Amino acid sequence: MKKERVYEYTNIYALEEEIIHTGIYDRFAGYWDEKKADIQKAVENQDIGKLQEIYHDYTFITRCRTTSEFAEFVMAMEIYEEEQLYGEYKTIFSDARSLEKVIEKLTETKFALFRLEFFGDEEAYSHLLSVINDYGITATCLKMMLRYVNYNKVGVALKLSKYFVKVELLRYAQALLEEAKGNNG
Image (cartoon, rainbow, N blue to C red; front, side, top):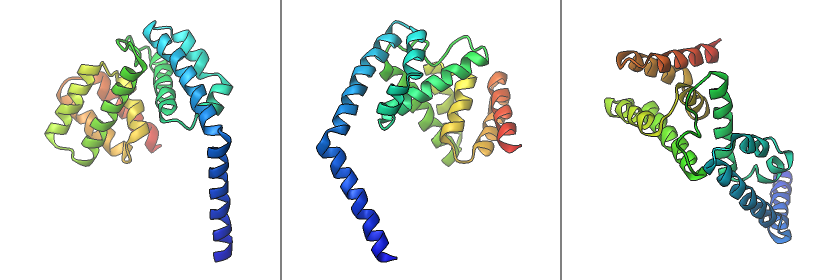
């Protein structure tokens, strides 16, 4: 058993070295940089068609899926498509004139949801409300982010929906209750 484990680690090490020395990582990183410039331009111009074209490009997916920025871009595109499905007037790309600004929206929302899940104090609720207002986070975006980042999705959705009823953000409460129902059934 121990011998098999050593063999597995040796293979992993050999593959890592091959990737580094053959330049595979550098080639893919270069491809991401090229596509990132296209994404940046599309976000600046609010060219959603171009973003969708890039998002659905198989070569782009296979070459860039190991970068964290790619993951953030995919998350933003999935949120955008869900926002369109639910008829949101504003989207994750509204008021964002750069990919970095979109990623900032996602990151701030992510951390606010983590804080709420793990601390759950009044300050955490207030902070999340500030993030929603400051970054224009839609009910659909919040629901999707909850789906992506929280461990106790149903519990957080229920707590948040009560809070949103209290502060009269009923659309947010409804979206989160629908998400909780979908995760529980």
